[in-house]
Every structure is written in structure tokens, then in C-alpha cells.
Length: 359
Image (cartoon, rainbow, N blue to C red; front, side):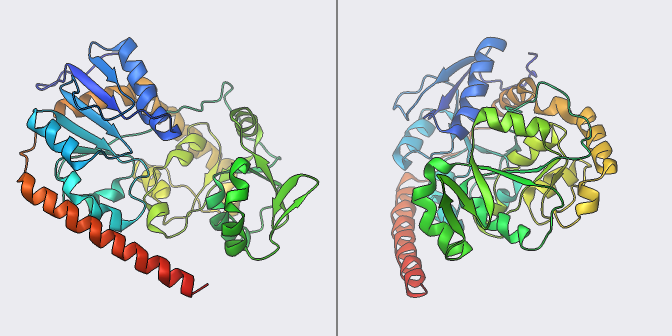
């Protein structure tokens, strides 16, 4: 891999905390391992926030460390880059953690909408992509007949059924989800979908008459290879609107005709790159050969941007471009931290109490 030459290129980068979560493996470990084998930059992989980090730059994935840890690293002259994958699921968390954000030199975003909220506390942002982890071996052609695919966690079933209540899809639907977590989500789903909407018959879960299948990498690969099309839907919640476009990338770059609502970041992301994805309501366009051909041309021109080589090179570039930021008064940072955490706890207690009253 050719790493772009930058004046301040880091000679050693630490990746942490690599705790085995799917997101930290995909965005952290995969890239770190690739760079170990294909670049001249030394890579340090850590599973926790160790006090002494022997690196010029520190990449932090998802989980934020303590304020004192950040202050210590800043005093030692370390460049700190933060990748907040699905961390800020409420706007209140941004306010709660502002003292920590003030210690971070740059932020690498998979969803640039977050810049609006984080920009008060950090001014250096970089766009990054997930590499195409799930890549079909066989190039797909247009499929005339077949089934439509939806893949997602159980918590995203309510937005799925919001669409199914409005749109009649003229093909069978297959749903892959994390059934191993079903018992813990049963109350949530019954509350959102209605009493009796979720049932178990002969050991098989279903929701509103649609069979729910257990996700596995093997079944996902099989269904992605053979489905006619796929779609997703996001609610208007802060968490949903600020998620990375990972699923859309997974479908589109595997040449699967994909539909998503036009308020989602996935729609915005691909529209900015020249591909307008139809919404599920635009069913004639979504399932048409014309859309497949447009998508196919787009993939031919852009697939290289999703390779591990390209994504890893961007990480090196970010480390080089990130400038050390002057550390603010540690006393004031600690005051902010104490005040903001107390305020956050009070707000959450009040919100939970109100939610209980409305049930």
C-alpha cells in the first residue's frame, strides 16, 4: 500500500480500546492488522486505556476514556483522533462529554451530520468509511424474480413495520435479525408493535405475520447473493439519523438494488456521491432494471473507495493531518465534567420518570 506522504506523518499509531465489539473489530482491528502488514507505520493494538501509550498518535474507537486519561496523554504531546461509532445516541451525551471532546485533536466521522453537534467542542473533522467487509464472491446480475431482504437488529423492527404498513411489496420478504437477544427485547417489541404482534409458533418467532430468521454470516451471504432487492428504514430519532451508512454501503457496493427513506443519512451520503437511491415507496423505480443499471455503473466507478487499502490509507492521512491542539485549563475541564455529569443524570432520571407516567 502506498501511504500518502504528509509533513507530520505519524511513525507509530495506537489503536484502542479494541474490546471485541463488532464495530471496534470492523473499524479498528481490521484496519490495524492491515496496516501492520502493508505499511511502514508501526501499529500498536491495545484492548484498554493503558496509562503509558508508546505512540505518536492515538486512535480511540467508540468508547471514551476518563477525562484524566485524556489530559495525561495531551500533556505528553500525543495526537488524539476519535472515531465515535454509534456512541452519541442522544444529544445529551454530547453535552455530558464536552470536557473530553475539548481534549481531542480531531474526529473521524462515518456520519457527517454529527459535525453539527460536535463542532462546538472540536474543529477538525475527517470523513471515513467502513471497508467493505461483506463482499460477495460472485458479481450479481439483475434478478427478475425472487425475494426482498431486510437485515437489522431487533430494535430496528418498529421502523421496518412502519414501512410495511404503508407499502405493499410484491415479492416475499426475508428478515434476518439477532434472535439470540429476543427474550430481552420482547417487552419493547410488544410495546412498539402492539399486543399479539410478536408470537412464537413451533419454535419460530414471527412479527405481524412475517417470519424472523436468525442472522448468521453464512445466511446473510446466501441471501445477499440471491435476493432481488433490499431496503432499510430509519426513524427520526437522534440515534437513527446519526448512524453510519454501513448497511446501505454493504448492499449497494454488492450491486443489490437498495431503497431507503430520503431523510436518512444513507440517502444523503449516496446522493452526494452521485447516486440517488429510491425510497421504499418508489417501488417501481427501486425494483426496476433501470435502477439496477444506474447502481451498477456507480459501483463500477466507486468500488475502489471501499477497499481496505483505501480506507487504511485514509487513516494514515488523518494521523498526518491532525494537529496538536492546545490543552485548556485542566481545572476548568474538571469543573465542566462534574457539572455536566450531574446535569445529565438529573435529566435522564426526569425523562425516565416521565416515560413511566405515560405508560
